Image 1 (cartoon, rainbow, N blue to C red):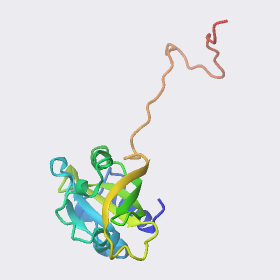
Image 2 (image 1 turned 180 degrees about the vertical axis):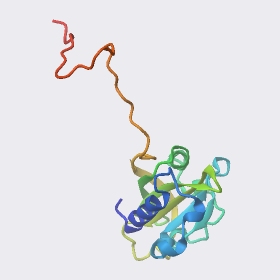
Image 3 (image 1 turned 180 degrees about the horizontal axis):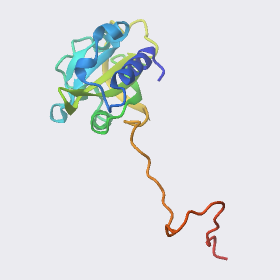
Image 4 (image 1 turned 30 degrees about the vertical axis):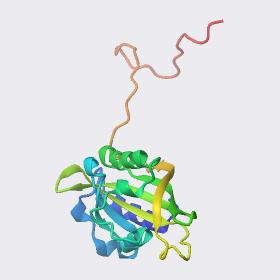
Length: 195
């Protein structure tokens, strides 16, 4: 993660979830992340309606020059990236994983802005697949961005932020030898390449 807001939110989210797949929405305390609230948002996990914003920080709204509450997250994306962006929200909520992506924002005058997107799952009132917490922040804010809003987003690089739950046991390999007595030392099995 390149942006400090992404790193801070991920650390806070990870601490709040403990050994669970995701924290409860009510456990996210705005005061604990007050320095990055402007870059954060919460989406409702509602695929039919394009994952509308439940909350959007002031800097996120300023990127687009309007209030984003109740607006579909899908609407922010260009036609080519929209299906992939929707799948990212679904993946974060369904698979209980954090995702970080590089994003390019387009401005009306043809210029672009590099941003970072972070998506983290939340449960809501005990329901899984309910909310997604995130950050959308420019890596370097150009001086005129507050005056000229972004018109659309394009998805770039993507990175998975690790296993959803650390407590999932890895599969165990078992031998095919009878359970007569344990063998110690080196065992050689016939095989190899045909010659």
